[in-house]
Image (cartoon, rainbow, N blue to C red; front, side, top):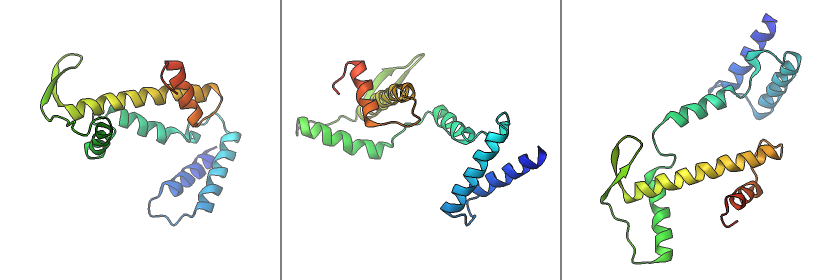
Length: 155
């Protein structure tokens, strides 16, 4: 069993090495070898391939920073507002926003960005539940359409 754990650590280090000249074929072969080891030893905690992805997700969720950069979000807002009314401008005045225990000052663009991110995160969560219900590990456009339909939005 110790030899299996050592082999797994070596495979994982080789895959995760940034400067290693590992080709796509070799990575595929190594992942197949990891899968074979996982079938032989299903209870081994070292063979969980999702640990790194889950750790990265938890790290990102703890960050208070927005998902999108303001420089990327601003042109989108300007384009959408211009399509409705070309004379409409977004104010840079601060707005007092009530958070759970305090108030904070945010610009109009920041408030829009916060609302858009919260909406998208909720939509992705609902779409993920639809995909899980369909016994899939990936999202399809039809999952988002169904999630929006269940929410009562236009699909």
